[in-house]
Image (cartoon, rainbow, N blue to C red; front, top):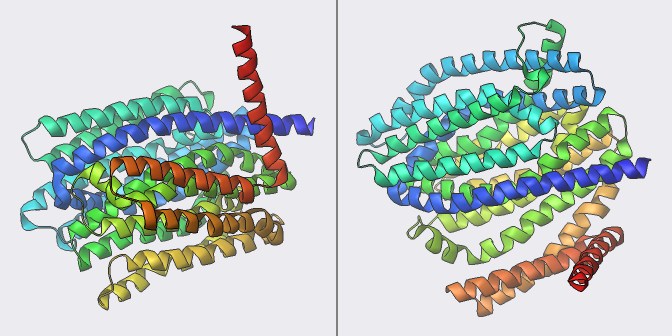
Length: 518
């Protein structure tokens, strides 16, 4: 019976991952098209300006990130218990908290935020009005995003990834419309872009809300349960440390770059993280499909299954990102030229370092979810927050001593490497994870795969690569083949290899059988 349940869980993860990949591939195609048009229509300076201001608004919503983690955990727990009354109560308390948070961020945004944008940020005088419009639109979009977090979380907790795929179609269509508006308008394109993007975000959140009405637990009932509010609030409060530190690592550095350099450098960093975001979506989709299983395994006390998910999730997350990153890292100048035409010169080094940082972070994603599943996050969040916040003052000092903007990413890579091992220590204590097993099952296969495959790819790049479309196609194919080959040979254990070979054999014989029937 246990093996049957394990197979069902694995099939559910695979199905949900495929649905999310369909959504992501569609959005990827749309994003590649719209990004080029948006960058061309706005120009490097306005594109960088938008990234700085929108990023600052995201920084104001740090409370929302903490609540998102709490929401998913508590909803997943109640779903396992199959108690609809308790689930309704939890959802109601979470929704009340999000309404309070949205009001607090509105208050903070219209006071401290406005002062910061108009008095501190490095904005050209003739773009102050446009910057304020961008700020207000970004704030509106953020408020709707906060209010919709409980609805998004219930969809993930229920593992309804089909809906996410459908909403991806809607999101992609809206991006095309926004792009079309930019192309057709003769007005201030930055203002038009900000307004259209805010409206698209609001409509998308309303669509999520409308769909979720079919779930009984989402029907809002005004009822305050102080004990549950305290429980959720405490969890969210400690998660707040992680949210603040993550945002300091992202948006705080963005502001520092704006103060010490220029909006052109912000544009380069924005492009780098846009590429990184597209690639990391592959990993995020896999982890989104796996996260509910990790939480549910812990909720029933099945640590063995939880450990298996941790090993599998960490390793597969890394390999997905590695295989996709290799051709981008080596073909980056040609890709940027093909995609954007002209681009800031700092974009290449930013993108390569951001991808290197993301490879380390990909190992930690499943570890973070596993710690959060336990609810014992106080010491964990304080430790993670302390180390991540170090990135901000260290980067500021480096910039003062005239170090280049990308030096902040080098600091981030070192810090993330330290945090990976700290997360393992916490999991060893909380859920009895065997670190030596993690090293054997995850880090050793990952390290061996990189040590062998990366030099081979670099040798081909140094000796045969050219900046032509034909060379790009051939080299990208070869890089992926080399990476996949050594992922299979050195990255997977015998059991995993056997399962893959079995699947391939079944697919092959099914094709032969169908062909014979014809």
